[in-house]
Image (tube, rainbow over all chains, first blue to last red; front, side, top):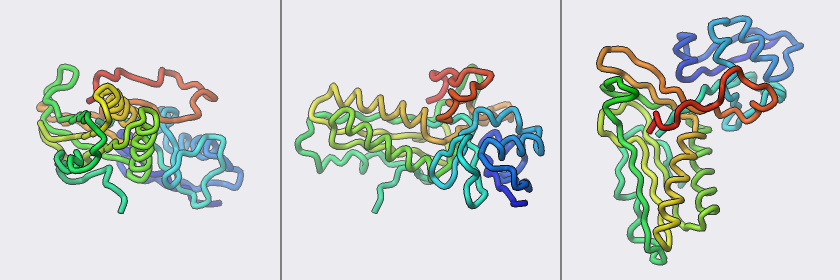
Length: 83
Length: 161
């Protein structure tokens, strides 16, 4: 088992009522997509918003097929609206 | 020192113009986005910008560099404000210095659009009726084509800015 930490932004943070959320992952959670599927099952209120989120590790976008970042932290960025 | 691209304090336009530099430039295009008092028929009282700052700063710097390259202009500067803003406050500034006006205008528009559509910055509007909402924006996933989402990627671009 390892702990995954999701950093939540904008409407996702509102939906969760917190800026981060942690889930315990079994060893078969290998990719970002696996991690998101786990989050969706643990936090169904977030599930419908996840598809349109970009996932970020540090200052770089990671893709669904990429391995879970070594530090177990994934930032979830919903659609953006600056300017 | 790296130039500021995200500011938690009020943005001042004048220092960004670099009028004492770039003698080869005869054109300066400036866009200033300010907070508007209405959005899609609703009366806006104030708003708040938040960001994923590490990625937003990186993307804005990439947009500046890409704009210089694409339009062959020597100076492109974008600063986006974060935090609580009132009506009329400056939300974004984009300055382009160029030899001539045509590429200055084009590069300025390109850079502003690219930042709005690509930098992870969110606008939460607070309305006069006491409610609030995040403005619906652009999905910045770059692997969407592999797993199509149920809805289209972009909502109305005219609605923000």
